Length: 122
Image: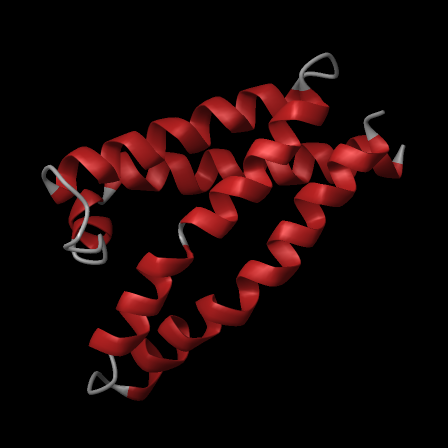
């Protein structure tokens, strides 16, 4: 049962994050690295759609292992955006800075969690 709860928790987190890309896209547009081709909004929507798709796949036992590996990849892929946010928010109020800086070390446990769900899904 803990395995299912862990997978469903991961799916919920991914679904909430993915949905937020559509509910508040400007927040994400601002942290898209400028080096990426295309518009920031395109990347915001693509990353949100990817998180929603991975969330659905993690929730289903048949696709859980591969989806959890994809989740680990997504968590690693968004790290440059988190670095950009932390750099650009250096002069913001303390609460904003704390949130931006907290995102950086948070990626490691998220990747670990996704890999653990993948390992347990075998």
